[in-house]
Length: 209
Image (tube, rainbow, N blue to C red; front, side):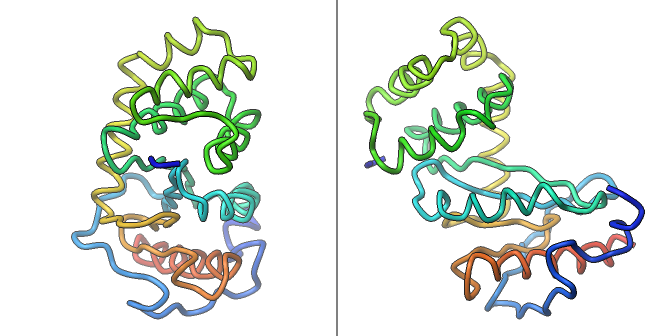
């Protein structure tokens, strides 16, 4: 297409016994300037784009992992729209989130975009997305009300500000606590990327302490 428990608090992560020591400018880069992150938790931000095939392949790796994170971590997904033409994709993510339909439709929608099983044209993108959602059981009134709401517009705008603050130029990428940025293409594998994220999260945790 063109367009957790006390045990977890003290343990590193459940997936790896001891995170590696990633190398700056090789396995991760520093975010400059650092982005302030409120609260005591270390924030992990998974940046993805519905138009990115690599993001689709990374999703089944990072999402199950994200469900087992210790309680001192906060995790969120941030959709990336590189320009105004693709902003409807960002809105779609937040609409699905607000309607609690991410588990049901997020990956199905993702695959429909990447594998081109549904028509998505830049001139009618919002309508094409709406058609897909309605064809998959979403009520028209619920979709329209959420999609056109002030809240969804604000979330899409905030998502754009977030990825720009991190200095993104590609996806998938993962931001760690406003300080570090890494991605699967910077490591030996998608699974290895998780190890790097864990190490950087530990590093950020120590900095907070």
